[in-house]
Image (cartoon, rainbow, N blue to C red; front, side, top):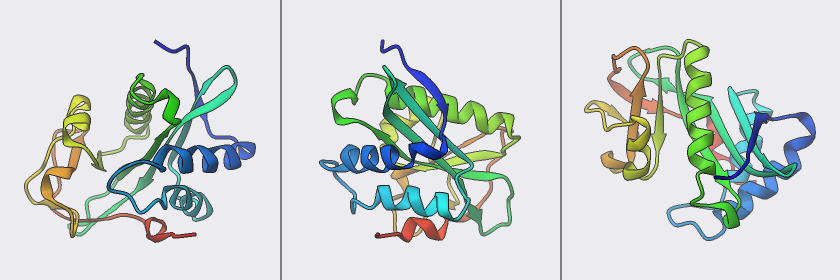
Length: 169
């Protein structure tokens, strides 16, 4: 296990997070390679509810963003997990999992109702995420959109991420 230090993003981390995110998704499937722009747009819109970095030997090797989402039913205090970035040379070593676990714990402390994620269902089910019938993200195969509830109830409706997710530069 890596000896990671987790902390909240600081002002002078912006460039390192941008570069890390770009590198993390360079060879990823199912991406438009805009994740670094999305994180910046979330930051600029002041919608980074959680922005955690993982450091190893004082170098940022991982980052996770969490931002508010809207649900057509009007459910409040729901958030979206991601993008999650880990430097390619540290992927599959528990960095992303550690970031997800800490982000979910922070959301609970913020009295969040729950969190949604778009991603690999086999990976995110490890954290308690599951497909919720009636909770949808348009134009996405249902098995890749999952949610976790902190109070045991799940809203119904269509989820909308921040406009920042449309960022391309």
